[in-house]
Length: 283
Ligand SMILES: [Mg+2]
Image (tube, rainbow, N blue to C red; front, side, top):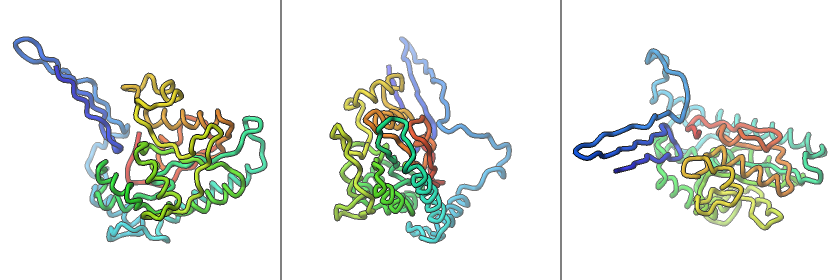
């Protein structure tokens, strides 16, 4: 009997589990019901879909990088839109600065996703032609090659100066934690984006939350993800359970910033801010 599961990479398009059961004298294959990870409409005609090469060019234009050099323009539409989200976040944080918190005595906090929320991976999208590969992506991560997302360093720095705790919450694995911290802050390797250092929590945890291997899950992830396949947290469960854990340690997450809807749903934030990213979809 062979059991083969096509594991979902970061850019999952189809959740597929194929189970083959061998019988004496022959084999019968049963295919489990496969569902696309992305639910969307079914076009009736090809002209209802943007040609994928045309779409790639539209995205290059949106990033102010029509020739696909991998460097987005500071005055391109992407940068302007990201900055407008950061400014909206800052206005909200300023307005809430003196408001009461949901937990009495709680410290106000912000949570930021990393990829395409704090750091922009446009150079990798171009280099990979939008085909995510963990090995080549890991090289960009290790070499700390990602510039800051426009507007976000200023917003996070302002928030820290106003007394907000600053937490980063990413689906990047624990093995990439040091490189991620170095790229976000300043360690002299590759890009130093200049974010404020993540806030250390009262229990001694550092405030950059990367995703552990299942075997190393803390209790709050084990409990939240017990019914997920293999006990491995979906992105939504991982992120919501981590925000719940942060709030349980005496924080009120006033704003949660992310580029994926899976960063933003699941509660444990007073308000969410969606950073633009037309390059991929993570369920
Ligand atoms: Mg992201």
